[in-house]
Length: 320
Ligand SMILES: Nc1ncnc2c1ncn2[C@@H]1O[C@H](COP(=O)(O)OP(=O)(O)OP(=O)(O)O)[C@@H](O)[C@H]1O
Ligand SMILES: [Mg+2]
Image (cartoon, rainbow, N blue to C red; front, side, top):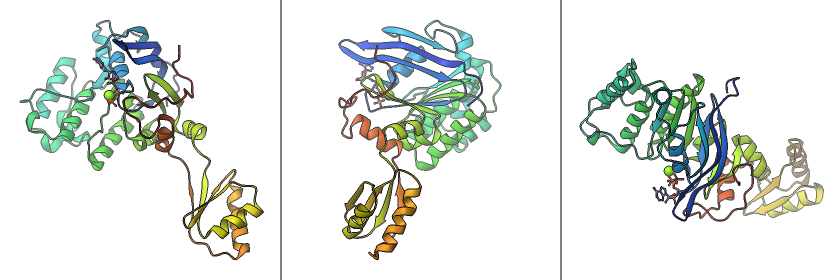
């Protein structure tokens, strides 16, 4: 993250209603210059609605939004030049090729762009001359990303840029996002891939039913809501007995393995010493800690539909 603390996105008390539905129900957040900020949440949680309000495409019902210090609802060419957007479900002119599309966008922005180089960055160079209508779903998305980058924006909104991409293509997009971050650009990302969010994001917000239920770095969220790290040892239930008798730690016996909750690194040594001394046979040993996905599933409920089960609000965020 850069030294500058100036927020590039500032949201206060944001509400968006559709009839009786409060799709966005009081969100406060700030995105700092140079960070990758990810917005995570189940289907229907309010991510796209929020992102499109930030992009100036939808009007908020209540609250205030500043993007690079400006109101995105006021038409402003300077602001449009400084931001890049890929909408969820990106569409384009059917008969236009990626190379023509990039050049067309460059013309709109008055930007000089090396179209083949930009298409190479998103791994679309081999389809540079194919019409949009014949591109595969993933190729269309890659074009969306290329177009969002034509004007070399300071702030890029990427709404599910990697959904439906193959693993290699997804990694190519990660590389583009990392490169943006290295160059001090700010990325506002939404994704359903929690592993991706954990890898790429400086901070994430988890949103459910239009409210932020957790906000922080992936590490902070895992530390706050995750379970303690466990040491897993392959071995019989007798091993669990030995450990329960000798150490003040929480021990669980599962099929063919024993799990011990760790309170410090030194616990590992104590555990290994005790099991060696006991003479009970044991096999492989590994440690396991919660991922962002484990924590996410616990917070929003594993069988979430339409914005999630009613989890108690657990963190800072918007509850006006
Ligand atoms: N134009 C609209 N009119 C009425 N309801 C809408 C409109 N747009 C969105 N909604 C509703 O608002 C809620 C939030 O939708 P939104 O698209 O923001 O969710 P999301 O978090 O982006 O979900 P997904 O992960 O599926 O993309 C949903 O219940 C959706 O049906
Ligand atoms: Mg969406």
